[in-house]
Length: 182
Image (cartoon, rainbow, N blue to C red; front, side, top):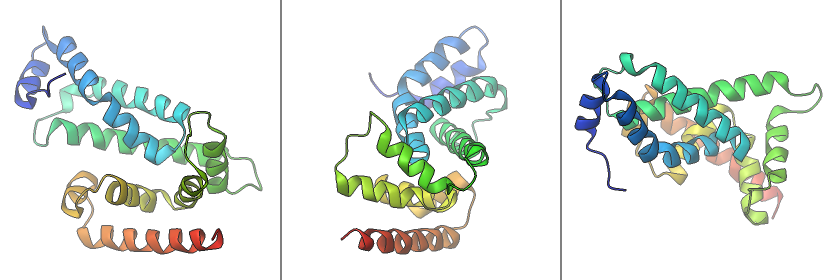
């Protein structure tokens, strides 16, 4: 599939006759990228699937609010990240009393039939799962996606300094956890 001409897609989205087809093209183009971004935040396949569906539904319902001031992909990523964080907040409030939410998330990841990593990857993912939501998101965007802080700042609406601080703290926490398993 060739990449979409974003300006053409935005034009088609504004047309009531062509909106559905244009949105189908966008879903086909961005679903996999959105899935993996969501999965890096919520960790498990089933949860990522659910959040992806919510993200696409919210995007469809919010098309009239998309003004084209940012790229379509940025708008979709912002919805995906917000939906992922909302999902985690909801999930944490449902966790059984006496079990730390982060460790509950990590144990779900290790039990996920779609997780195919080795022990080192499992320990890394478990360490990442213990991070607060914002630190986890900043870490995954910078470490795995190699996103620049300036792009992250635009996406998340946060200062570059705050993002660098969050990343630094996240690295320190992950390093400390990883050292326990050496």
